[in-house]
Length: 323
Image (tube, rainbow, N blue to C red; front, top):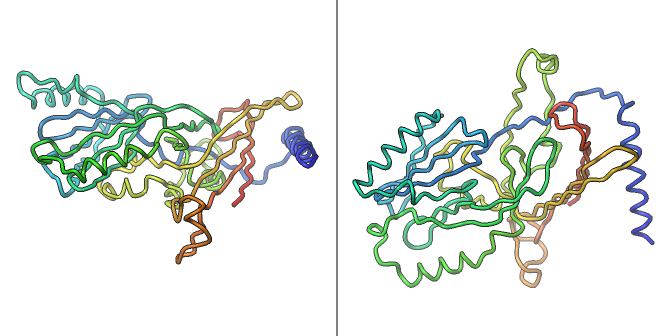
């Protein structure tokens, strides 16, 4: 009975929001423009001495390149020149990469393709790159797409010569890491910060931007590391690569459904983001740690927005946050 009552109250709230939004006088405009745009397509080309990582966005018009030394074992020697390349320049680079392999090179055919770098991990001998190879669209917040990680692969950064004979501990740690299921409950977006609520993703435009005199230039907000579950995996690249390479992944739950209410279509989205601090099984993690982090803290957010408008400027949205 309590659930039925709450469901009726929820429907009444949504109905009021739907009916009254056209007559509501907004005192302040809010934009949901992307404050960042991560690289969404990643190709890894291995040669004997280097890993060349070429990334671009969905439009495949602007490219960036990472060069990783495969002879280094104790450190991640990664180079980012910070330059955006055109497609013709990338084609020339691929020809040079193929030439590095000699006459029988198969560098281009041995490439690994993915949808973003999950991070880098090291055990006892050399680093590994964790690459997202499969994704699934689960929600849209305005024009921002939210994906779930479906599959990943580990690519050895160090070559076989530099790594030498793998120790028993190295093989055991790699096996333990593979036991971590990265294909369920991990979510990310290339243009929307899932570590923060809706209020942190919108911004107030200037009068010139509102009048269309200037393109919107929202201030980039850094992700909340509390909910960034690949925080430690990205630490080796801190201040060494362009921010567009750094894809933040949350652990939790994201679901969305479309409702038709009084002739209006609305999206109802649920986002549950779990803190990476003091997380574990309920039997082992209880109360708070010495830093005040609550055991298995989860922040839940319910977002309702107009499904008929795909615009950063005119979308009607509301968000309710629970801790």
